[in-house]
Image (cartoon, rainbow, N blue to C red; front, side, top):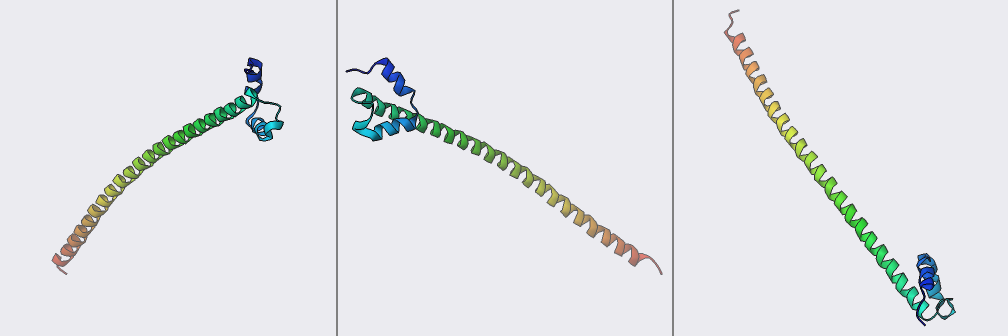
Amino acid sequence: MPLSEEGRATIDAMPKIEIIGELNKGHRSRFQGDRFDYLKRRLAEIEETEKKEQQEQQLQHAQTDLKLSEEANEIARAANRTSTKSYCVSVVSLVIAIVAVIISLVSQCTTKP
């Protein structure tokens, strides 16, 4: 006996846990024959949908992770550029300080007491 639309609608409206419960009952289930077979197909559809949703979520998380990694990489590059500039300024300051010390020493040595 083919499954009626009403029978399909009843099974389609069932939550996954209830479908699993009916399948676990086996021959004691209120669904037998074509309805029991449809229960199996419906559970497979639900699980496939859940699997696809999980894969989509994982893909979205991976895309978010990639975007965050790219942003962190750019921040690190900017910090590296700033560090390089700071290093150059420090070297120039050190050279200026050394030149100032030399000028000071020369001027003290050249002055007559």
